[in-house]
Image (cartoon, helix red, strand yellow):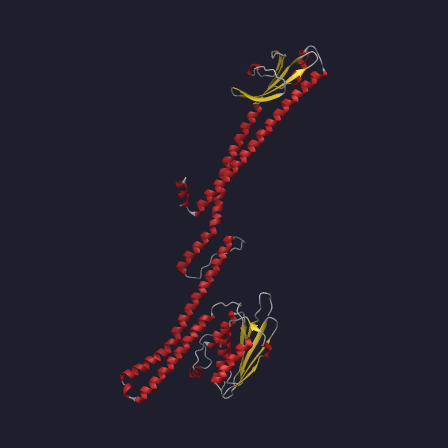
Length: 469
């Protein structure tokens, strides 16, 4: 048995499902046919027993109603109630046969036997199955026994037909079970086969392949759905890594080349010229600082692409004041106006660190491109019971309308020379946009050249499990 099970377990899943399903369906057919046969057999035998009892009752009633000294006078009646497959025999009080009404059944097959009470027995004579009923008879003039012997040939023949039909049905059921098992195996394995095929395609064609999905509301369709979601996430992460590598290689090339050029200059002859040496070292330090900021921005940009959850909360009022106070210390020449009293008891559904990062990016840009006008205003209000809006307004250089559609693109600079002078990498607003959108928020910029810029971003309000803000 263990060997058979081990052999079955080595088969492909489709054939294992086929064999097991066919086996169980065959067992079900066998049990059903067995129960059906037993029920029909008992029912048919009961019909035969009821028939022979009915004959016996009719005979007893006849003799009770027609009391006669000569029992043999009832022979004509017995001929009428007798059947071709049975005989009726009358015995005297000693058990000796008086006469027999024979219906093509030899009376020698059953030995006469007197009884004192009704009996019903089943016995065999060679290949013939017989049903024998005996009943005592008592009249004023006669005491004896009535025997009715019935051949159950029809009953046996019907049983054989039932067995044949059920055997044929069982074979048909086994064939159907195999066929149904094959169909079931294919149907169940098909999603797994598609999944395997898709994995093979992914090996050769990359992460863009997906499993064909039908929402059948079952575990296998759910498996396909989960696999596709997993592949979407893997592809997104892979693309993020590629973008990070591309961005890093693109942006790091220039400062590294500048540093390399100055170091080569110093190595060749600049070390002996204090002026050239100082200029080269200062330029290299500037580029190193730029590299440091650029590396920080690249890492922040990579983190901003990760999906965030709304289970975090940030105290807007506290964080805005904290960030602005920090900038006020670093840039004492600026005047910061804060108007966020409406958000004093509001929390945004965002991590506090990320809200701080967004504010620092926008305020840093406002300070860099403020020009001679050192006024910056930070305002905030609740738009409804679902969202809050924070606005940062400066009166600086502004942005030309032609550049506005692309200000959130990675590494996009409105003015290359101006951005390089200010130390910008072109990643700040891109990072801010990704962070806001990661929390299901929106961000937009309104600006006019020489009129200043307004950056507005909307975030969802944090609500607890009871739905309270």
